[in-house]
Image (cartoon, rainbow, N blue to C red):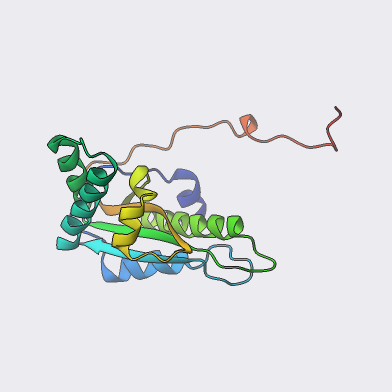
Length: 190
């Protein structure tokens, strides 16, 4: 696939089934992630892959987090949390690892980790792999962070769900570029 096609036509694939990406495809996914803009060459990211029975363990961790945050959560809410990781054969947990640096603020490092996640999505689309980036409250939960083994300087950027699209991908919606781009002629007048 042409690089511009991947950039312009990429869409999320929320319905995913087996098989998961192959070892060779995964290598391409992570190589693309590692090309993210990275001021200072800090590599402010890391990735956890979750598949097979580990998806059930992640579901239990999600249910534990929901029960901890909402002690009155009913079984339906806990079951929903347990089933979240089962929506795809492979999940990649994208983790930002910020560090003190005199020229690269933490905000810039978070953006770099987000770019790494986007690189994975683009590489997935280019290879015909279905992918969707999900966040939600469990991306920012202390119980989940502890269960995933995150350090104090780390945070989940999101969960990338990957697999084979269950149905044909939709076309990317048309967006008018002019709605988002304008020229700047100098400092705004008060």
